[in-house]
Length: 402
Image (cartoon, rainbow, N blue to C red; front, side, top):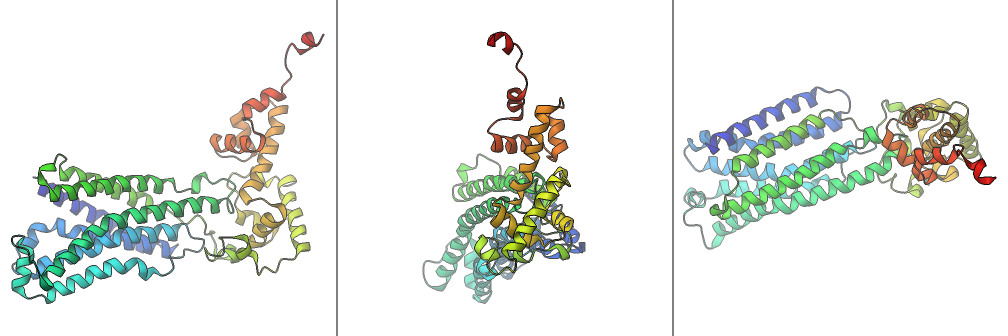
């Protein structure tokens, strides 16, 4: 019964992956991002082929099919975490860039492929012994193949842990970069990847349990089919959210692409980012005046969807020059600069009007109560409600003073 459930789950996973691949390849915008996600979905589908067609493969005579199945499984399994990392890197890049030295991430899958070729070239009698599971070789080339195969399978566990760490670290850096581009970052923070990462850790634990069950069958207190169902749920959620994403740090039109953000290395430090800028000190001062006027006179901060590119179009300046002016002249990120004006206007309204706190938050440009409270408290050290109480006339004070 468990075998049938596993086959059904693997077949469903392949179907979901193929749907996602077709959807990605039909997209004309953000091609690099969609192709990187399609590559991840492809290896997921490939990884499920041995399980989905296990009974069919068992019916084929000879030792070549088991070798091919093992090669497919090892290579695809070792590609899963690196390709998910490539997708997250591309999604959080300022120019849909892939990681540098991509070949380094494919070393383990390449070793799995070499193992497959070595097994194919192995004499049929020795190959039969390797896959029989009875008497494993104790010396020579056959023993080396068994050891290499075992090491590659064990490498899956530290590899997954390493890439989960890299993904989380990348997302933390991405959240800081959002503040250079958006005045409200809540819609762009990719919280779903944190959820997927948490589920990935649980899946990693499940894989450890499956390894323990394989080594000691009497430990099998949790049905393997249940773990597979959890894996299908994880993959379905990843596919659903992945197909909906656009790279938040990439502007909607190529003409708005900031020149100093073309590479992630350039955005690491201000010195690297603006070291060769043609913007003079006098031009920076003029641009700073324009930026303040856009907030104080045009009230651009009231736009809840305000971005660096929208502001650049409004004042007719390069997004790169605006970032440089904000960092070097004004000394604030785009996020802090805009929200400073929002909080200042909110302070005035809280002390002079009877509007609700939430209505004021929306009026000055915030799109969520939580972001308003966080920004207000960061600037004033008080919550909006506490601030309003301190600014309101206190009844009965005249009697006390007299």
